Structures are given as C-alpha cells and as structure tokens.
Length: 585
Ligand code: ARG
Image (cartoon, rainbow, N blue to C red; front, side):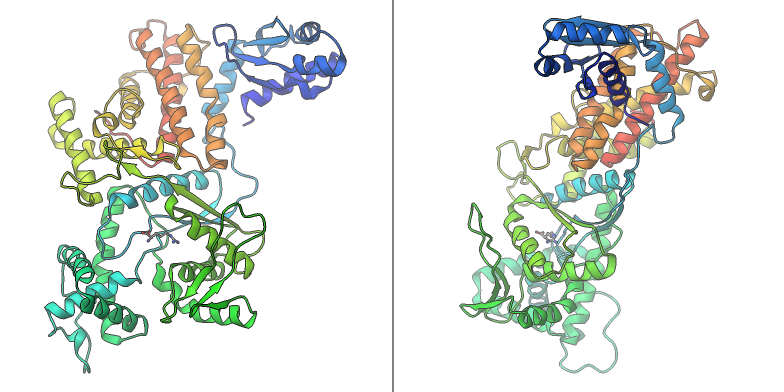
C-alpha cells in the first residue's frame, strides 16, 4: 500500500499544480503542532521565493483547491504561509480498513531483493558464550528478520571462532591431564573413541585454566602454540579431538541460542575457510598484491585521502601462521562460491572496525568480491554495568550469557508469582518470554552503535519504555479480544468517537513510515520507538473508553477492529525484534 503521507502529498501536489505552481511544493509532513492539525505542508513558503508572491496568498490558492477534497475535513492557512491539514475521519478509516484486510498490513516488499550473507553471533568454540556475544546475536537476529520480511534472501551465518589458539590451549591442557587418551597415541590402530572425553562443564573449566596457565608458564604457552600448529597442519589425533570439542561445544551453543530465540541458517566457522587460504594467497602473490615486511607478508590497503592511517593488512606472520584477517578474506572467497551474495553484512563489536576496514579494502583490491557487492560493517557499542564499565558478574568476572538470562528470568518470575495473574504451571514459560523481551528491547531500543547500561530493574519494568510494557499492552488487548462475544472477523472499523481513538488510528497509519526506514537503515531502534508510541496511544484509548461495556454494537465492533489491528501491528513489530508475547501476564 502507498504510504498515507504519500497519498496526501499527491493530493496537495495536484492542488499546487492546478493553482499554477510547481507540484514539487506539495510535500506533506506530519504536523509538529498536533493541537492544531494532523498534517502540514510548508511548500508555500518555498514557492513564495520562486514566484515572488506572498506565501500566505499561495497557501490560500492551494487551500481553495483542496476545500472540496473528500480526504480533508479542514484545510487552513496559518501565517506566514503554512497549510494545516486535518483528515476526514472516513478517509482515515478507509485507509486503516485496507491495512486491516492486507495480510502484510499494507507493507510493501522490496523491488530489488538481494542475497545477503549476515555474519552475526560469532561465538568462540569452547569458550563460554558471554554477554559480549549477546549484542551480536540480538541485533543480528532482528536485522535478519527485518530484511527477510521486506523480501531479501538472507543467509544467517554464525561464523564460529573454531580455529584459533583456544583449541591448542585445550588440547595442550588435556594432554597434561590425561596423556593416556587415544587422541594422543603416536600411532593408533582402529578408530578414535566416538564419545567425547569431557562434558561441556569440564570443557568450560579447561579453557580458562589453560589460558591462565599459558600466561604464567612460557613452556606451556609454547606447547599450546605447537598444538594449534599441529592441529592446523592436520595431526589426525588432534583433528579427532577438535571434532569432539566442536561436538560438545556446538550442542551447548545451539541450546543457548535457542533460549535467546536466535537461529542461524548455516553453522560455518573459521575452520571451513582454511582450505581457501593457500590458493587465495598464491593468487595474491602471482599478481604481486602482497609484499614482505619484517618477515611477515602484508597487503597495503592505505588509500589516498585517508584521514587516519590504515595500516597494511597482515596476512601471514613471520612464523608462517595466518591471521584473523586472512581467515575473513578466505571466508569471503568461500561465501562468493557458495552464495554469490549481493551483500555481506557483519554485526560485530565496533572495536573491530579497523579490522573490517582492512579486510574490505583488501577484498576489493584483490577482487575477491564483485565490485557491485556491498560489504557492510555494523559495529555495535558495549553493554555496560551501572558503573559504566563493561558488564561483569558481581564477583567481577566475565558474565556468562546463560547466567544473565537466568538472572533476568528469576527476577521476572518473582514479580509474576507475586501478582498471581498467571497460573503456577505457566509462570516459568511466561517469565522466560518476558525476560527475553526485557533483554532484547533493552538492547535494541538503543542506537546499535552506542554503548548502553544494562539495568535489570528498568529493563524489566512493566511500565515505561520497555519490552515488558509492550507485552503487557498486547496481552491486555488480547484479553479484551478474547472476551468479545461478537464475530471479530466481521467487525468493521468505525469513525473515531474521541481524540484518543483518532490518535491511535493516526499512529497506526504510520506503521510503514517507521518500518521502512528500519529496513533501509538496518535500524531496529526505529521499530522500538514506533512500538512504544503505538502502545502509548493504545493504552490512552483503553483508559478512556469503555470497550466491553459499550451498548452500541456497531461502535463496539469498531473498537474491537481497531484494537485488533493494533495488536497485529505490535505483534509484527516484536516479531521483527525477535521476541513474542505470552497469553497472560
Ligand atoms: N569470533 C569473533 C569474536 O569473538 C567474532 C567474529 C566476527 N565475524 C567475523 N567474520 N570476523 O570476536
């Protein structure tokens, strides 16, 4: 459906034209004086300069042309030359009825669907998922849903960190603890054990222990480096052990992401890109794209006009090891082969922005991606604690995501248990939904690039600009709908009876005005801002209107139709944000 504001602009543009002015002056905007009118057009002020005429008289010419238009209840001019527009209620409700009949609530799909590889999540295998990975998962999931809703083909790739030193550390530590494991036999007849020799909790204890040891014990650090190198060179026992680490770790990661309502289409990792590295580097060398620098092999990526120095991209270290950037370039080779994406979109901590700048430049310079392929880095800020420093546990350690979710869930559970509205058997499931809304909305309502402060009390409040408040609004609407005895699908929208009802209707017409920029700008926070406004209008209407007690059945059906459309819009929004409403709360 065309945006209401575009429809109105077309009408006003026509009026400008028929009054003898250029139609480009007819652009309409939402009124910044809602006490005076709903929409306004400031075109007469600009036209005055071109036509050397008083703006007020141009506005009057145009207003006269609009006087009989069925769209407008009132078209007034105001000094020095504004056009103040108020819609006729029937016109407003016709627009909403069309939205209500449309399965997409009138939202379009893109004319140029693109294939987008979305790189988010980015957990490191064998290291516990911590809150640093939370933002990538939350923002990425929402961006994925938004792009898909508007028609893009999105491949969500978790891009596991599964090939680095952490693997060598674990292998070295296991070797010290249990040298008898078959994975360490120098020659093995038969197969490696099918069972992993550790559980996820053991694995999660082994990694930090090994990492701490490596910091103090240079011999152990050397051993871990050597194990990493052996693994990467194809040592069969280490490779088999690596597979076990992957198996145990992946099961845990999948469980965690499921709890977050986050999913991926492919579970590729850094290890999958390794086979592409050698041929890629050989090609670079052949074309003279790299040079030696202090024993390392680098590619220059500085460009004329760089405001800040962009250092060369290091591809191979002096000891022969390849780096994070090498892997990211090889991953682009792999993605080009697998998906031929129109866009590769990375949702990663903004502290990695230089890395991605270097990788993007190298990829373009070497022609790994086609010139028309868009490479975008969305760098997000840090989630801080109330002390303004990166969020930690009470003991000051790295907060595990699982524990954070549990903490928020318990907090919410206590609240709903106290209120007694939800049956005991449903309380936990309800608390999980509310907790997710609190966490995700608390994150997504901020501009992604900004840091924000995690505040459990504020995020989980049922009132104010929070996820639970949105859920509460939806639940309230659903409970009225459930009590309605008439036939909801036959209910027709009616012209509004009050200012609050009209405001709600007007806010609903602006769904598209808010969701489209969220799509084009990959900006979930715009959806949050809109939802909050819509929920506010819905609650104001609810408080002022006796909906279920209304005696006039047509009027009542109109109320129901309106709140049902509100529910649909809110549920669409929260689905795009990645959470859902419970039945009661
Ligand atoms: N595993 C990385 C980290 O924890 C994030 C990966 C981001 N994606 C990428 N293609 N580099 O920092």
